[in-house]
Length: 376
Image 1 (cartoon, rainbow, N blue to C red):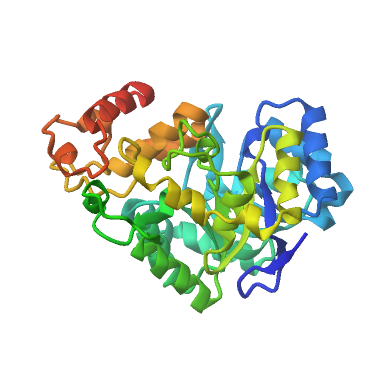
Image 2 (cartoon, helix red, strand yellow):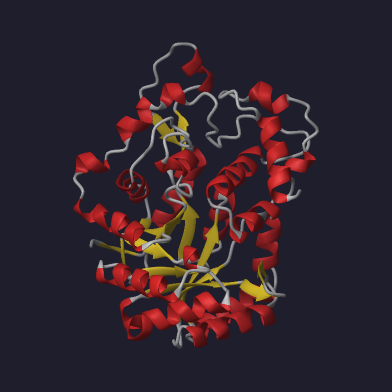
């Protein structure tokens, strides 16, 4: 396993990490086998987002005396209320959840305290202009958390939060479908013009470079797009990428320290750990991305070239959450969707987006399906 510096924290993290989200509802034997496989394979950073008591108890028991071998990412604001996962900035709610975390994981500190899921201006205000941020800073002062992190899927919010100077680590969604946009006008691909390369969205370039300049480490979620990029029929590129190609793509972004792979089986952990033994040729993602360019028609690239929308729907975000839900529905994806300021049900079917879309997506139908899938 190769270990990378996590920004300026002084921590060294395995470039292949583990996200334990899919351990929810799994039997203890599988949880234990997954934990041991990951640690024995050299993984030393684990994201522990889930607030459900059973999964926390199972993971804490499985980790046992190997706590010293792991760097915990624990989320401040992911709570259980009325028997369900919820997000909260209420200090009492957060404190109860953190105390429960420490008890169930049998630890007296959390390496990285993640300010949980800040994707909008409303989230930002509720987090940074409230007693919540004071609570987070007190946790650090008291040694309950060692470093302050934040999880976000929104590039603009990521940039804004890094600029506060309060953040040490960012957990961010990175994969080719989220990052890439052609380096020329998107319509040129339908005019017979050969595209030589794909370029990363400029705002994402700004974000990655800002993190690198300020010594902010990035840990990666959604590297496989909930498995979508590994499936030729569902991939935005018309071809399947491999696990190694997706991990390599994320690790190539500036400031990225670790790719936290979410798994449901021990075999999936094995597939991720194999990355360390792959060749540069096996990791090379450039050829398949370029080969896939002519096949992009009908596949959403989440580029939002379909905007503006008179209803202010973030079409890319709605479509992204719908696509992920088709592969792996969860309370987390539903919460992401519900946090949007406008939803599929707000679509008035004006057709403006479809006229603008360079990939000829049936956006109106997608909005209808999202409204049906998520109930709004």
